[in-house]
Image (cartoon, rainbow, N blue to C red; front, top):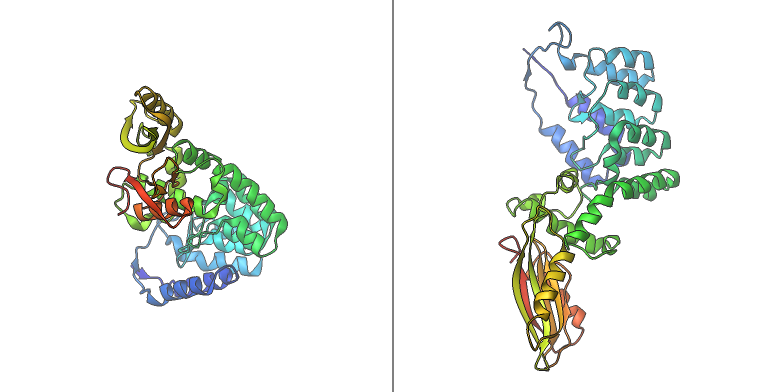
Length: 358
């Protein structure tokens, strides 16, 4: 057994990506390095059990520093393409080095591309910071395109970092890729009623809809994962159709005897995937069949969300329904804001099953 001090590599890694990180993120990374204690690493078998996998990580870093591409290529014969300098995968160092030739050599070794830093940054976040279009294109061709749609822990997409650093060409490329990768997610939110068509372009509406969807897929069990930011796991849930069920709670509004009335029921359909539109049409048909009801409206509520309806205190038929919100308090506040009068009150507020906030 030997011990391997990764402080040297971790600090070197931090220096390479320092220009891409905020002061808070740098503080967190430096603290992580300072707290680490060396631990035994078994002598591993890169080739014939003769040397540990990380025994030549210094050679990789040195070759990259010296821009010696042949030495870099040779070092990858005994070092895994997924090896790390400290806690940072070497592919991040290569991307930050702004040399597409080195990146192509590393990509030939088939490294993992679905990797992130502790701050949530992906390979395309780091590439965005470099502004190197050729590096971004190489990563996308290699299979890292999904990263264009992933937000870091501050809620930033790669194209936004490129815009912030005035890398116009890189920002346009990354924005186009993000739009393509996000299209299934946007359609999912709209189909299931988490957001209205077109609402995704509003940062506040997008954040709320994403939080509600995440609460649905995580079952309300791990609040730390409900961030409102689109991460890799959230996109995976969309692809696997998780949380796309055939049930919705529905909030009805209708006029009866000249007064506004509300009621709530549950829509269930024995299909693997339901839609808010189907739940609404079914509810409208049911409402209109009841004698004496006029101006029926149905507002489907997808799993995990909350709705509220507000109306002026004087008797009448005017009302305002909130968008799907994360908690009943938020839904009530939104409905009252839409009502826009000092004498408005909440007529009804509902949450979906047990996953709606208090």
